[in-house]
Length: 607
Image 1 (cartoon, rainbow, N blue to C red):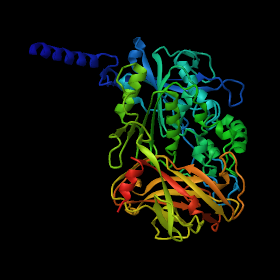
Image 2 (image 1 turned 90 degrees about the horizontal axis):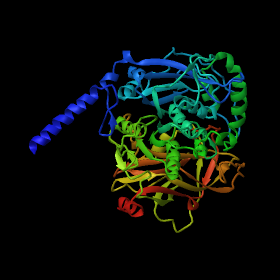
Image 3 (image 1 turned 30 degrees about the horizontal axis):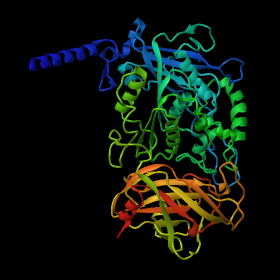
C-alpha cells in the first residue's frame, strides 16, 4: 500500500509541474497561480480602443466613447479565453496643479460661502496605447486579462467628469458590456472600425483604491451582467459623507476647503476643446447650484451622488477594504455599503486595518475572491468569517478573523459625563443623582484637537474620562453621542473626539495610541440632515449622531476620553473665535460599543 501512495504522490507532483508548464491557468489552495508561460512581458498583447457609451455629456451630439487599454497573454490569440480584472480611474492622465486659491477659504462665519475659488487646468499626460500599468504584473501572470479605462472627461475618454454623476456609473458598465459583446468598441475615438473582445470569457472583477475604488461600486450598482466580483479599497461611496457631516460643511482630512467643484477641476484632463462646455454645464451650474456650502444640508444633488441609494440592482460579490484611521475617505463609506449588501443577501466580506488611506487586503484573499467568482473554483472564500481586522500591533497581511463587523458580541454601553471642574470630568456608568451645572466652552480654531486633548484644562473644550482601565477593552462598531446644547450665535460647529489618554507625544506614535474615533455635526440640523434652521441664541437643542466606525483594543493603563469642542481646524469651517457652546450634562451621554457589554466595561474600570 505504501508504494501505491508513493506512486500517487509522484503522479500528483508531475501533474502539478505539467500544469505549470501549460499555457493556461492553474490553481492551488483555491488561488490562481503564476503561469510561467504568461510571465514574459514581451509576449503580452497590448492594445487600446474606444468603447461607445449610452450618454453624451460633452454636448457634441454623439455618444461619448471611453478610452480603454487591454493587456493579455499572447495565448489568447490561439483560442484561450480568460476573465478580466478591470480598473478605471479619473487620475490616469494626470491632475491639476496645486495652486493658491484652488480650495475654498474656510476662514469665515458659518452660513457664508467665502470668495470664489481659482480653477486650475490639467495638462494631460500619458501615451498610447498604455493607460496604466497597475494590476498587470499581479494578474496577467496568474491567467487574467487586465483592462483599464479613463473615466469620462479624463485622458483620452470623451465626455465630462461629473464627480459621482450617472455617467461615471454607466461608463464602466459600457466597458463591461463591450467585454460581453453588448456594446461596440472602435479603434479610434471617432472612427467606425470595430474591435471585438473575442479573447475573454466575459467574467469581470473590478478593484482600485480611493476614486478608483469608487468606480467598481458605481459599476456594480447598474447591475451589469458579467461584473461578478468587486474589491473596492477605501472607496468614496457618498460625496455627501465625503464633504459634509450631519449637516456640517466638513472637509476630508488633509484637504481643508475641498469640495466637489475642486475635485472636478483636479481630474478634468479630457479634450481641451470640450472643457468650456463641460465647465458651464456641470461645474458652474449643476455642481455650483447643488453643493450648498451655506447650510450643508443633504439634498437631491447629494442624493444622486450617494451609491447607497442605487444598490437595488447590484449582484456582484462584494469584498470591502478600508483603514480605520483613514480620515480622508472615512471608514463609514465602506461600512454603510457593506451592511446594505449583507442585508441584500449578496456574498460579502470586509477587511479593515489600523492605518490611513488605502491599503488592500492580503493578495491571497483577493486572489481567492477573484478565483471563486471569475474562474468558478470552489475555495470557500465566501464562507467562514466575514470580517478580517488587522490588530493594532500586527502587519497588514496578518488580519484576525471575526464572525462579522461590528463584532457580534459588542453592545452599546451608555456613559454619563460627570463634571469635576468647569471643563473636565469623568465618564460614569451611573447618572449623577443631583442636577449638574451646565458646562461651557469657547470656540477658538487656533487650538487644534490634538493640543486640546493634551491640555490639563481648557475653556476651549470639555473633556470627560473613564477611570484608568485595569484590563484591555475591545471596542467594535459605532459610538453614538446624545447631546443637549445651546449656542451664543445662530450657527456653530460641533466636533467630538474620542481619545485614548494619556496622549502619546512620541513623534513615532501610532495614530491608534491617541485617536479612537471622531465625529462632527451641525446643531442647526438637530431635526434632520435635510433640514436646518438658525439656532436661537441661548436656547437648548437636543441631537444624536454616530461617530465614525472603529474597531480598537484600548490597552490597560489608558483612559477613554470624550472631548467636545467647536471648530476643528483639521476639518471644519473656521469662524471668528468667541462662540460659546453650553452643554446640559444631565441630558448628554456617549454610547460606546464594548465587546462583551456592560459587565466587561465594569470589570475593566473597577478599582
